[in-house]
Each structure stands twice: as C-alpha cells, then as structure tokens.
Image (cartoon, rainbow, N blue to C red; front, side, top):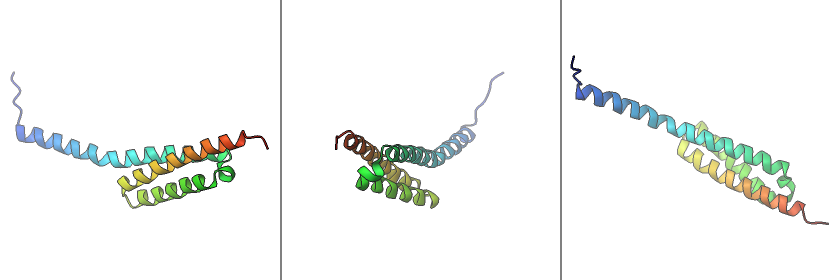
Length: 105
C-alpha cells in the first residue's frame, strides 16, 4: 500500500508546529535566565555581597526586578536581556565579596 502525502497539509502541520515551538522559546529562555539570575543573587548575598559589593549587588537586584517586570508584560526578549545582566552582575558581586572577605583587617 502506497502512502500519498498531501504536501499542503504536511506544510501546514510543520509550520504550525514550528510556530508553536518558536512561541514557547521566549518564555522558556527568559525563565531559564531569570532562574540563573535569582540563584546568582542568592549566592552573592550569602557571600556578603550586599555589604561588601554593594554597587554590583544592587545592580543585579535592580536588573532582576526589571526582568520580572518585562516578563510580566510578556516581553520575553527584554526579560532575557535583563536577566542575563542581573546574572553577570551577581557573579561579579559574589567574586568581589569573596575577594574582600579574605583580606585580613
């Protein structure tokens, strides 16, 4: 038995599937980066960055809050961008706090 493929139906199924996958990438990617940023901020705080690396820590928190705001507006590209910056700043804050905490008084 030969299976006949209807090209138009096949293209419709693939384009709808592709559109569904493309639409889900934004929220998934932004939430992934927001999760990383949140963990990084908590690690920075546990290293004492909220007192030893105030600028970097505060910047990370502000960008994380902006990422949450943009995610709430469904602007997932902006949310991902701000979450990446928050993650990077939190990592810098953590490194700086750890370096400053090892300096003897």
